[in-house]
Length: 180
Image 1 (spheres, rainbow, N blue to C red):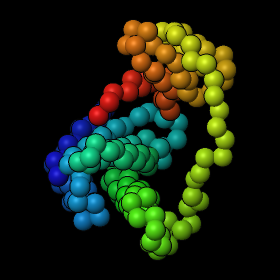
Image 2 (image 1 turned 180 degrees about the vertical axis):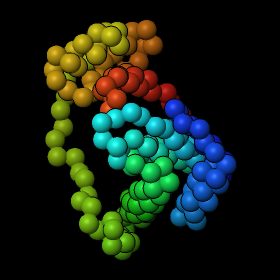
Image 3 (image 1 turned 90 degrees about the vertical axis):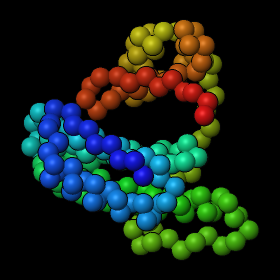
Image 4 (image 1 turned 120 degrees about the vertical axis):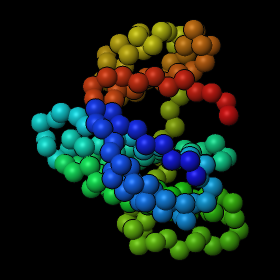
């Protein structure tokens, strides 16, 4: 597993990097198909002191799947611990769903106690709407007018369906899908 550690508005020192490598290496025993793990450590100036240190972990698996988790805390090492713990739970949930999908004729595997407390999501509504051609800037304006956190639209510049969304920092993100 390749591990990439980056810092944004923060210097990643050797002790922090060694600690992160040790904690993230544990994830490989839960999911051996991990090809790359990327940890982004950041510091933001927020009003709440306990939300300043951010750890975001992205795991890429060999069939092209992604798992992502983010945690915030006052202490950077605690944020790393929390994001690794959250990723462990996501991996367990992912493995349980994948095994259930691969072997529908067999009984579902017993879920760990932590996963049992999380409600299983399901599709409860299907909505259809006409997708309009517009630029990403027009899509952001439309999203704001609707009061939504995301907006799906057709981007004629890329000739594909795109999605704009509001980020936690107040800025916007643009998702341009690619076939894997």
